[in-house]
Image (cartoon, rainbow, N blue to C red; front, side):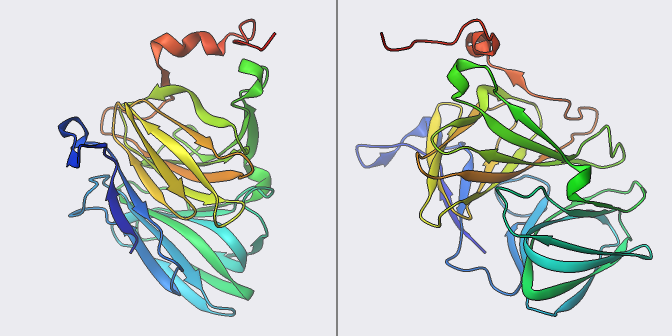
Length: 287
């Protein structure tokens, strides 16, 4: 499991009391072990997200079977190649780059069973699971099923231009308790911008184009540094946005959990920054 670190401000050698309830970032281990690397448990662990998140690594040629009697599961291919067998359908998939290749995702309801057979280079998956009594049809989302949306184009000198890939949400999977997607954050630019918030909790899992890469994540009035493999938790209602260090492309898988009676339908932008959405206002430029 990764290491926890509170996102807090230290002043005069003491923890600032205003930061005690700030979101946390879970640091990546030096290397993910073969098998299931649990990062956040669904219950009994802070932060209280209510969703399990893990990184699952397979050795070359390894074949594994996955089923959960109570939880829906989403397996997003991060790297390598594999063959997925799900509901009688066999599909060969591969991913050479998080930054240049859209995702593949196997998504099943509780009780669904599928197998993964890793290719010659092995495979790595991001795994999301949440208790959900609803039944729905299992599906493999292939790269061609995932629309890439370049957000921020034409706004504030394109300082927040990024590639957003929505794998599934309440429109495409209404019975799911999850929204799952990816963001490719261009080097030195912002994403989740202008700052916004929503009533539902969110998880971000970061990767960078180089292992020494880093970025900064805003959570309300707090800012913390995120590195390759880190996972961060965004509390409900917290304004948030991210920026990548110049020279380092930043990727993050983002997961939002629907709340009972309050499904996620989109962000609510922070009032004082809404002007940034107006393409006629590009902000200050040097003379």
